[in-house]
Length: 213
Image (cartoon, rainbow, N blue to C red):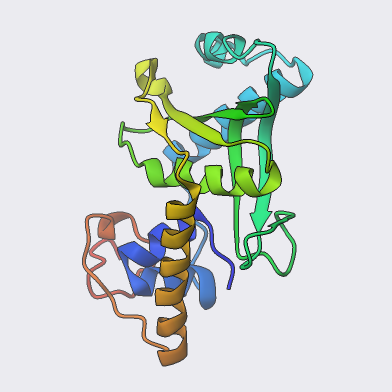
């Protein structure tokens, strides 16, 4: 079993959605102009912060957010992380990974880490995504003890609220509980269709609640 924030959210939203996307893998990969734009924005930040590649003309207004990261701390950009079931760090693609994530940006020293997550959509503060990133960072950088993070709402040129992510033990317990619930569904091969606000955008067209088919 290999989990990420996005696959866990799929499972919590609808068991059938999770099954078709991550187990059967019999639906098309989701692609919308909004998703494609988000990918392009993330790539622009990565290329600028890693290699100094200028932002495209139509994304130049985002550069001040990147420039604000020029501080005397270690900078992680689009860092891929993994964690095993025993809580030890591993690589993103390792076969024995339990959870993985790719964080957008993190600033850290030996004791403290500040995470930033670029968002191009509507504002919706869900600190669990940042909390997962903190758990995986804590495994990879064991001297770091304090974790905090912001979402950056680029559409509104706004840095979101500051989330305290330091209680990585609590988050790790929550991550394990989700995995245990998923394992029970796997054992029973039970993947019910569940009506939810995302039904209109779901790639599982055969679902009884999907009215876009």
